[in-house]
Length: 265
Image 1 (cartoon, helix red, strand yellow):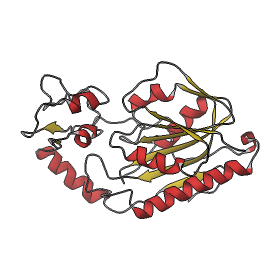
Image 2 (image 1 turned 135 degrees about the vertical axis):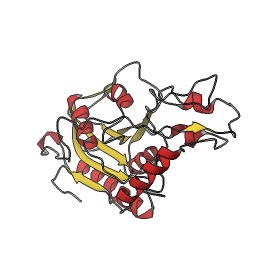
Image 3 (image 1 turned 90 degrees about the vertical axis):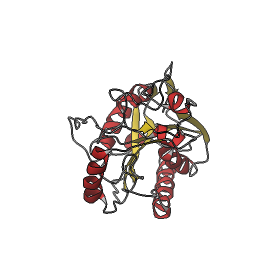
Image 4 (image 1 turned 45 degrees about the horizontal axis):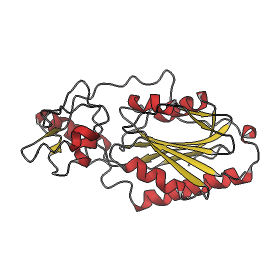
């Protein structure tokens, strides 16, 4: 089947998931419709016909997909429409995130034909997965997109494809509250960029050096967008937790890719 339109949807606080999704879309020849759901919520449903493709990418937070992204993802509706799902995690584990994504999109009328878990630099402890995705990763990302495009070209009816099996458990893992949040330092000039770009409005307008702990999801977006590089993690708890986390998760993980023909790599 030919795919006239690729609908690329991503939640990407640090822009890494966006980069991976865009890399994969380059393997398709159809028109690309891009939806950045990191901050903007959708007012209406987006209907995607069975002849088109949904490509979804989200990061993994504490073994789950970001709760803030779920409402937006539920706005995309299909009708036996092919879908590709991608999660991006910081070299620890993606736990139930890929299964949660699969359940979500299939409950909205899509048929998942391929899935992948790629590795990125950890958003809280950047020494874990440092500088990833790297050149080796992008070779695998390209290969994943190429093989997915090939599967679509080789079939006329996606309902004939077997159900895609991905790692995960139901009920999903209960995500714990991360007790670490970034904050501003003396380099902060109160420009308000972090306030505007925070997906959960966790940075006070009248004091952008602070972070509302009950709202923050520790996504790292404020660190990435700050023009003064004034926001960061720190403190004794961060140092102690970091030493333990780095020791436990420094061994390089490799991407996992799964295709509807049963091929797992």
